[in-house]
Image (cartoon, rainbow, N blue to C red; front, side, top):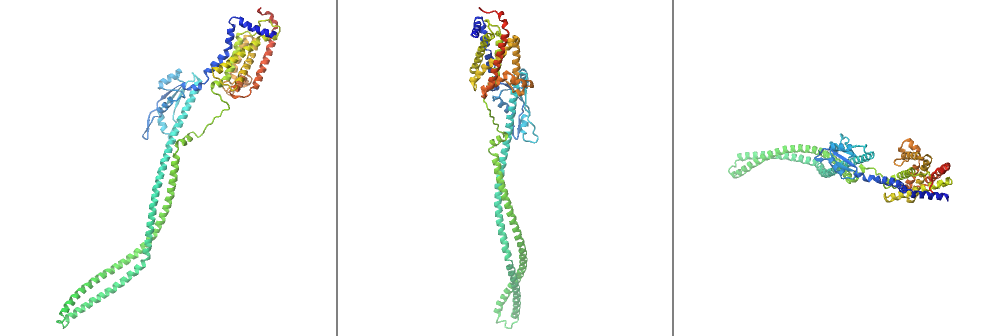
Length: 565
């Protein structure tokens, strides 16, 4: 009953003291202001990277290669100025240097004069890396410098992919054209094979004719021999006829019966003259026939020899032609298959080039879902805000002087600590509600988050109040230093593995490390916070027992305090 009266007297003091309620209400909002305003400023900065000013200096010179004009620097500049990855602006070198130095730009990308020329040499033996320079000024913002570096690396990756894609597409088109040429060669070779087939047929006919000529060679030789023999006999007969004609002429000349046979003589004389002329012509012609027969006989012999040789050569030629035909058939088949493969390789170019340029498909899976940077920073800033609220309250409000004379240490504790616990409960609740309403925070476990925020402020408040009771304002100052140490060792922004050895050692024992881990679980992860709850419950119990001891040790001073009537 005495502790309850002491608690009520504390509230009466607040309401009676002019301006104190306004101060209490102002302190009540300190955690809210700290967490809500700070988180709002960095809630989702990565979605606003499109507003980060970046300058582009295009010094690239247009080049002509294979009757095609290239101005890749201009194309890159136009593409960047149309993207939302940053606020790209095209400026000259002098302006870029000035704006970068004065902080108006956070990065300047410089495209060199030889950019297009170097790009057109891609794939050649003399190819050198293409230069693309970027300049930053980390003095104005290290975070902006890191973001700018990420943007520059993204631009580099994009340009690499575009150049590689263009080069591979040209190669694919070359393969397609080569394949078509091979297919055309296959068709020409097929036509050649058809001609070879006709040649082989003609060669076979020639070989057959040669064989027929060889087969009838003996008959020709026998006929020519008989013809020569008959011609000789004919010549002999004709000579005999000539002699008989001469004898008949003599008889006709010397005959005594000239008168009676005058008419007969004339007729026979005429016939004799005619026979003699015919016989002489026949003899001359027969002599020519003999010469011709001899020449023909020699020609037949040569023809026979040539025919035999031609038959052998024709057979060899036919065999060689068959071999050529078979080889051409294989070549034509290979050309056709190779051409079809090259054409197939050159088709579906976009898909194939994409696979070559980006052969690895990166799949990201996150066991939790954090919507934005602000949600990820909330555990850290909630912890800091609650600790700052406890320090501010202890600096401004007197947690030692009682306003009713306590009968014992418990009455003294009952006047001050319940009042403080009520204040911290309200401060933590208001902060949590404002985060939900203003920052649109969406905790995975909202009730647990709210309850643990209250528990955290009670634990922080117990620690800060104890040191304030035993050391006065010096204790509050020490708690401020302690908070700063916790800012470095609680791993609220970066993983503790990235901090130095000192902070890694103290990290597990810092109150803010415990609260941050718990808030991460309730906001995003969903893990149990039982261990953190037990730790903070123990902290509250221990430091409140220490405060009871402190009040007990100061009971002798109760007679010196001015009390309200």
